[in-house]
Image (cartoon, rainbow, N blue to C red):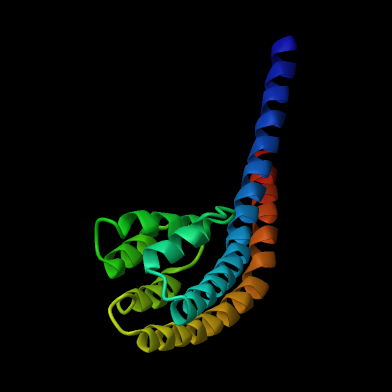
Amino acid sequence: MSRVINMEIIKFILLIAIFFASTGIGLTISKMFENRVAELKEFKNILNIIKTKIKFTYEPLGDIFEQIAQKQETNIEKIFGKMAVQIQFIKVNDAWCQTIQNADISINQEDKDILKKLGKLLGQTDVEGQVSEIEVTEQFLDMQISKAEEDKKKNQKMYKTLGIVAGLVIVIILI
């Protein structure tokens, strides 16, 4: 009798764990949509800072990246810290592209490709060329932010609900 009760308790605990795991997966996926929007907006803000510093202070890119990285509040700022270190050893465009591509953030590959295009001209052209390329990239980021917000509206609630429903279905099947 005691063994049957123990098995029922274990089964109940496993069913609850399955439900919470499924719900957690759904919430994690839905959070990625929210993070993508925030990260794109953060990149746009940082590009505006870079553009202003290039235009008015003529500071080297390594110094600008270090200043951005000093906050270390977001993953995006940490990326610029990595770039500042890499610039000491490799070219700016290589550091930019490698760091963006290898970053563990929520933006998708299309977003990364847009940002990597900017890296090809950073430090390679005159001030006006760099500023105009940053402005073009900002316009592309505006389009990506709009797409990301649409994706967020469309998919965020769906994945939350899907996680909960999938968990319930699995639990019902196993009961």
